Picture 1 (cartoon, rainbow over the protein chains, first blue to last red):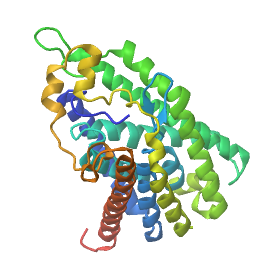
Picture 2 (picture 1 turned 180 degrees about the horizontal axis):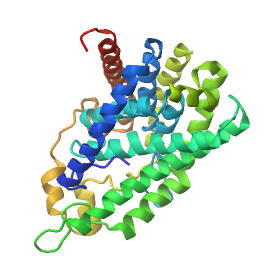
Picture 3 (picture 1 turned 60 degrees about the horizontal axis):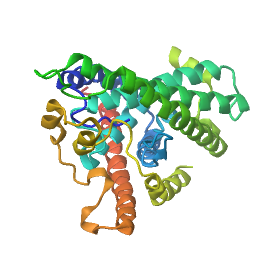
Picture 4 (picture 1 turned 30 degrees about the horizontal axis):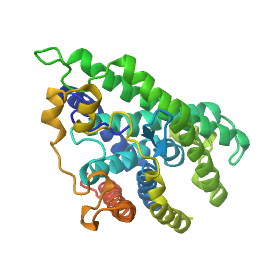
Length: 233
Length: 107
């Protein structure tokens, strides 16, 4: 899901970058207000976890590959705003050092994987885990479904960004300037990969890792009632 | 707990070549040359933008390790380690700066 440079028009990149600016600002402000010093290493470890899990490419039946992101796990464990920061750091280093995802496309890639994925996943988790006890089976399934949904909505966002290009940007001779595939190709391609394989992996990673973290130290994860109280403050 | 997670991350870094077992490219992440084979041309805008950035270790390859499967796997593990350290340090500095700002009376 790391869109390389050249697939999106500069204006698309600029727009999504402009969308990310207030999100990054809000995330920083939120962390500044609520972050406890003892949780700093956890956020950094979360960012590293996301980076590493994205290296585990899984095969897709159509011959392409995809991967989980860890974004939804981070959102559940660290909170969605901290997940925005951790995912963004991982994505920026991936783009700068390893050329995984474009430099111009950083706005688009962070929008998909550092904003859409954690927030959609977190919303689904909150919805499904209401009143669920830490370590319960319901919490396990809620986090799995959250991972599945979060990644798939992010994949859909990427598919829309790709698919818009040939509609909006054409050369003088009528050939597409950037991504040459329209929605009829991008949506099925991205969604089949993520609905069938990558989303399932993301769900499993989210649920299993969350279960493990709770077994180690349950107080790290706030149950939804506690988070609700936190929100009121 | 943190120590335990640290060990898990290190194990993940060393297992990362498992991610190389699958040979294809992710959808939409092809290089211009692959795209030329697929659609018959390289889109003009893409030609201009695709090479805008030269990454230090493109596609998690450490070219100085040489060719071959073993080097590819070693490069991937080394990339995992280098990337992990960079990401850990950068996010540590960023969050520490945030906390610092919060505690300093000036802001």
